[in-house]
Image (cartoon, rainbow, N blue to C red; front, side, top):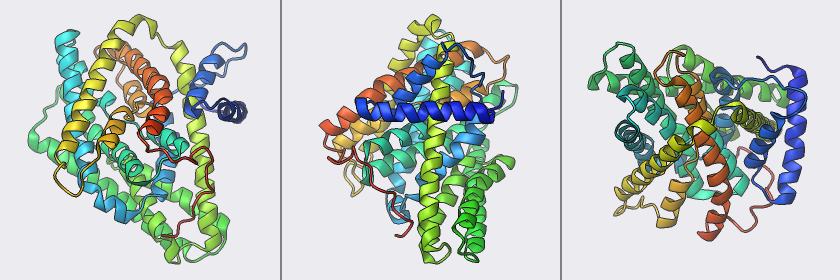
Length: 406
């Protein structure tokens, strides 16, 4: 069921009211939206909107990724690249391996569904992570680490997820094949993002109409994503690349001053709309999904999830303990607890073939885990940020969006 204009208007009205109430009640906005979505399931008038993989990937992810990428400084990202890459690759493999082994040995799952679930649930979700830390007002190195890891590990998960699905369908997977697929997905995504972002910068430099510049930025966000997906490489990395490229070079003359300000404000609003709709729909689907029947299994999965995340974060960060890229203990604790799960895990679970082993159980458990992540971790992450001294004192009042000058 596609989103009609009337349904979008209703959902945005609910989102606006929830935003005002959440601020008054000092409740995390994403949790307020999820609870509102759950309440919407009991409304006398059905919204009739289905949360699907295509809706999440094609509609919601590009604006959220692009808006976050606009504010990523290339010099800082390059400086933190070793830590981010280790967390986004080795960290995912470790967490996914612990989950798969736990489900196989403790829940008697066959290896195929155990590995698939371990992969799709182990990647931290950029939608949830970006929304939570933006709302908390977190800036600096810690936010860069969290956001860039959650964005980059999509490439790892996408490759391994695809290889595992192919293997369970009767295909073969070798170390060389996995490595080649990974490199192709990453490099291909970066190339697609660079090509589209570069073309947009060239075109934007020929106009000073801020509306046209906003249009070009929209083409960069969605065009890079769809081009990469068309060639079966990472759309997330493509959009991330395009966003970082435009965000770090727009002030060199490609965009007018008015255009830079307009682009930032436009994508801040686009991110708000995407976040609002996605968390409302997650809450709506949680109520209709059969979660109660999998609570014991979900409890085991949450335990394995936290165990895997702890081993991945503290183990990977320990590799840099004696270097200039050392991650402080408070930041490690927050990387562990701030590894929220959300739309990405649900999209991959919903995208499984209907005849895949334990399909219905995987989808239900994925929703249960996301419910825990959004509500429990989401409610406690802000107090933890304050307790560890990471959140700024004035984080409750969001500053106007900075322009794209560096």
